[in-house]
Image 1 (cartoon, rainbow, N blue to C red):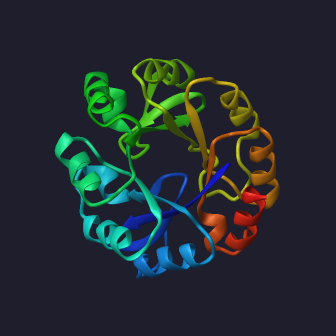
Image 2: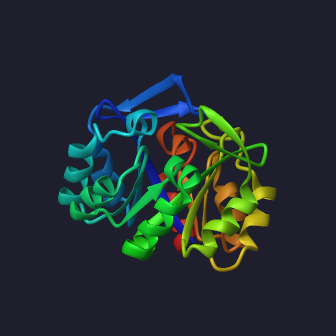
Image 3: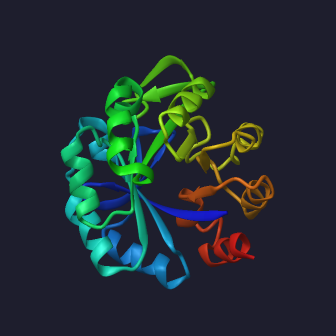
Length: 238
């Protein structure tokens, strides 16, 4: 299992939201590049970045931060948040990002996703944000009448190799991740699933690893000290 330490960006700072609520934001650092370097120094290999401003309005206000992280560390970087044009995908990939995560655009415009996968292959991942089994879009502001498992099957047919599945109800709440959901998801063949939202203890990671799930994102628990990143990395790599 790959561990993806997360840096959520807003106003070029490291922040976290509670259950996707922009009114419930905590700032953890004014220096995301230093945070990324710290993650690398502890043995991290990958970094999961989210541009929270981009997720709301489809722009790339934190691009200079992303570019600096890629240049100044050896981390493999995946990024999501408001990526809604081929130009933006190209911009990130040209900057050295390893994987671009499409969210709202992938749900609302399947043809766009198809074309992106044809052009960039496994450099394109899809973020599937779910609430009560349904897909949410626009920075989690709108929940659609789209079943998440149907959607995962659809994108797999298009050739998507990686999906980051977030249970919004668990995200940032520090009450554990949705293990029954990821147990079901781990049985899907042909698509790698990264678990996101609510990883609060090493036991959460242990359980996810035992399911042979592809990856797990570590966010708030890393910042508030509930999980030591070095211990988490040791666990997933053992």
